[in-house]
Image 1 (tube, rainbow, N blue to C red):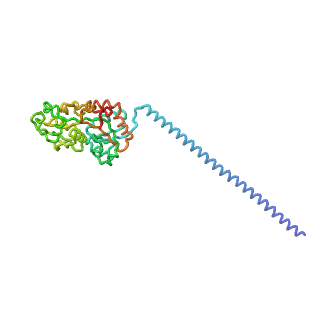
Image 2: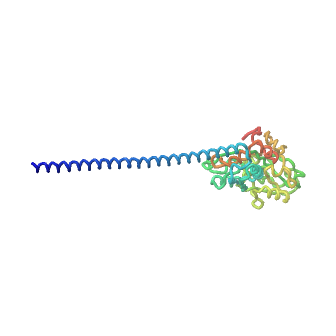
Image 3: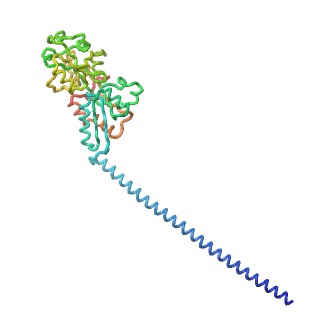
Length: 342
């Protein structure tokens, strides 16, 4: 009996021990769970706080950026006088007839946009169209439609901007002008195709006619051929061939019996050569507007695709009412004033 009691006490003792151990284990587990939860909860709170700080910082920069953008737009809209195309460069080549006016427009445009660089060269309409088609210049200046100089698929890629009107005049040496001030269109055609070779055949002195011609790349030549010579090719004179208007005028003035043709702006106030009337009509801007004088054409500025940025603004300025006054002062015509069209 005693033995049984001892065993019972021992069993009871170990049972109590196990209960206490189990209690402590559960307690420790709960404590661990509490601290684990607190730890991860703290991390979550820290993450949320960091996200909030990042958001506040980002919002601060966004607000500052929008404010700065608004101020810059406001300044631009108020006409601050500073260039909107800082560091932009506009390049153009082509028509020698359009070059003086293009340069004048560039100078006036740069007064309003001093940070824009505009580089312009001549070379002839054919050269300008080829270069703008290839992408080597922004603007191809031409006296004629692109389809007359480029393959149709290339011409279709270009955007045409008709910026003004140019009149082309036949010019002669002063010794000829003393006797010949007017010429018929038929006589002019016969002179440039060498059917008429002496000035006496048209009422002038007994002098041989010397042609000062232009290269085939010249848009001025194409205009003159189409509207003065009715499409007949002029006789070539390689010795005195040039597409530089200044050189051509010099050659005509210094060569006895010479005749050539240039854009009217080059000879409006010339002291070295004289212009001929055709069928009694003087080559003037007014006679071009009313359609009485036949040898004229549109001056084109071609871009490859739609003009953008500084290129677009330069062309827009060129065709503006503000610059229109200068166009007429220099001997060109304003497209909108034409009473006839082609």
